[in-house]
Image (cartoon, rainbow, N blue to C red; front, side):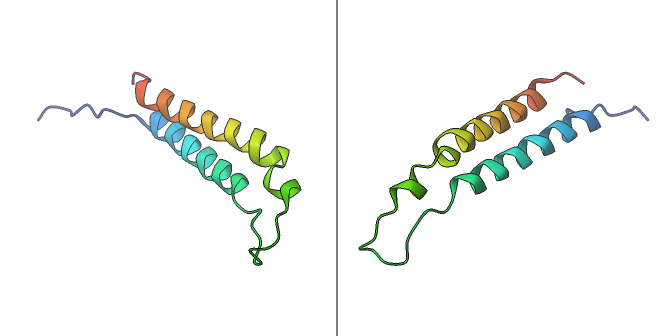
Length: 74
């Protein structure tokens, strides 16, 4: 019986998991800032540095990590 070579190794799956965790954290950082009352607008919550700077950087880092996990040779 021949040994099967899988496309991903354990290390690839670890990197993939890290990337998915970064994506989830980034999207959670981006969420919120809404108001229950449609007549109120809180610009300081909606346009905070966390939502327009930190969260997108985290999401891009997550996608980059996932791309690395996919392209890394076993």
